[in-house]
Length: 150
Image (cartoon, rainbow, N blue to C red; front, side, top):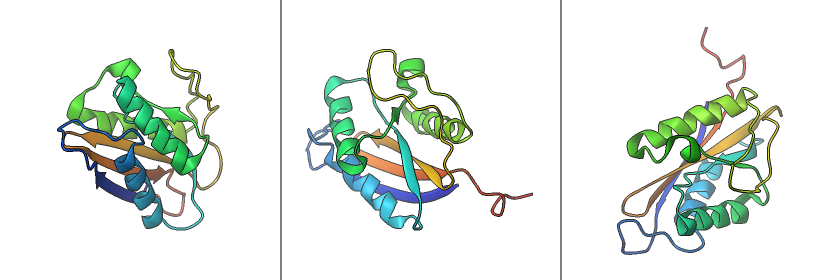
């Protein structure tokens, strides 16, 4: 269930630019949080994480500044960067995490590992980025039985 949406553009005049602190990601995540209903707990972030040292470090800095120490997930080490499809793959991963997928972690990073997302009201932030410094964040959570379509 989509609970919040946020977007922003980096102030860097480069088609692939990102600020060292991931400013656009931070603004997009905060906007998504502000547009969400109260009481939602962000249990993790599916990062855009394109696999570049500078880009990944900037996004992780934005996640840390926004949420503190939450688990970060990504599909890129499994699929590579699929450009337009990467956002949909990230939403698929978020859905699987919310359904209880056990995440084994990144093969190259020692970030915290999650045993799955089980709290009531828990949500996953999904980040994506595009050329021109665009960043978008979606806040998703498992649909409750009351809101599910029969």
